[in-house]
Amino acid sequence: MLKGTSACAGCSSSLSLRYVLKGAGPDTVLVIPASCSSVIQGIYPNTALNIPVYNIAFAAAAACASGMSNAFRAVGKKTNVIVYAGDGGTLDIGIQSMSGAFERGTDFLYICYDNEEYGNTGMQRSGSTPLGARTTTTPAGKTDEKKDIDAIITAHDPPYLATACSAYPQDLFKKVKKALAIRGPAFIHILVPCPSGWRFPPEKTIEIGRLAVKSGMWILYEREYGRLAISSPSKAAMKNPIPLENYLAPQGRFAGISPKALDILKQRITQKIQRLTEEEKGIC
Amino acid sequence: MSGRARLALSKPTTGAAGRTGSWRVFRPVIDTEKCNQCGLCQMYCPDAAIDEELNVDLNFCKGCGICANECPKKAIEMVREET
Image (cartoon, rainbow over all chains, first blue to last red):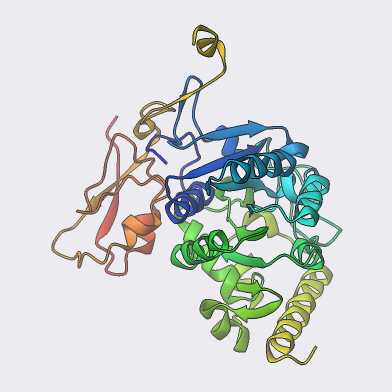
């Protein structure tokens, strides 16, 4: 990735894309559906990414990568095929082709960078927007809960699934390396705080990501062949998470969140922590 | 190969979106006295505008201020740009 992208100042999606490409190496092909990352490449006829990139329609990203991967393997090449899709392209519009690719066992890596809204078109609500968050289409706060895409992917039983956060780039780098070393479909879900959409100053991007992990709102783990392992930054955070308010307060999108929504969010965090701890111990 | 030129292909170029440094309102200034060269600013810079010797490439720094916020020694100060 070269300097001079058209990403917003403090964009953590471009930060995580840097680490994904660093982990993947030069023998990589990126498939990017319509999202922020198709914009941050720069202005035609120039591009800021110095590897082959295929920009494609929302619903076709995983199908396209599936074909690419099969074609590369048919001629005996080990080129990494990576889909770098946003949460709209994964949770809402692209879910059918992604589900198909996971079912076929395509050898590729699907990365969902989750900024919890349609950031590129002006912060509209997506399936991944958390409960109570204000977006331009939910001015009074979202009334529905965030879709648990990781559980949906886990149901496909992929060989590798991980969650990461842009505030922990080394962790992300390791997970990308691991995912690409495994044959078969892999999925990484990255939380990328978006300064313009979440309404916080750009210098706090990393801090907000760290708070998300520390409060338990976002848990870093990896699931390799069905075996769950909590990543080290989340281990301490799960034992005694910081109050959720610390994470919500700096963000303008949670200003004026109703006490009821806050309560549900807290309950969900406790449930998730409990579920994952038990799963790691092998209880359920 | 004549047909190839008509395809919508982009070429990798530094500064594909122009000199993004012109967006900047605050400029990072590193205090070399306080700096202990931990490299965290380089690690967290979304635009890779800080190199391994910890020099800021002001042609492309967008002035987001992540480096100043994350610096454990508080060695980076954001100074308003003169217009």
